[in-house]
Length: 165
Image (tube, rainbow, N blue to C red; front, top):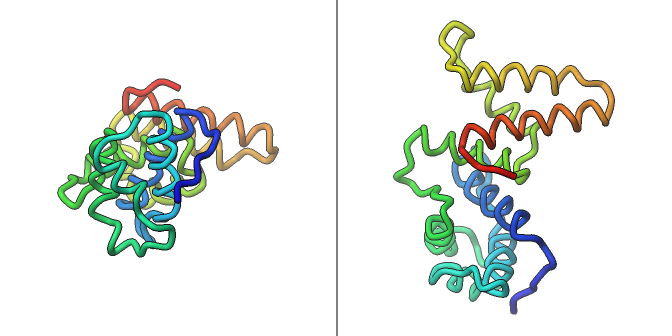
């Protein structure tokens, strides 16, 4: 049975971005129950695709190994590709979309980014921008400062993938 929330379309996009990122980031993968909730919300708002309906029809508690193909298909149809054929550039764009949309925490992005970033003289403009704003975020000692720095990180990420908030 679908549980529909009052989440905004922007919140749903952030959730889709996070689901896609969970497929490409190291770890356990996306939360199937969360994917079902997002799919139900999309269906309720008439923003569904065939695979979205398939995810919404899953039973809460379905294991990821069983839900994986239809979730990946839903993400692809919704414009958040994260499949096994994704290139490193596609995976990086997926993670940038997730942090830019607010679905992925800046702290988690910080760890992922810093493990992959090349030396300063080998960085492109985006990588340098991210190093600078992430350094500002890491140096902040107040909640207000950290929030403002996180907003700057999200803006750089959104600009990089061509999305607006």
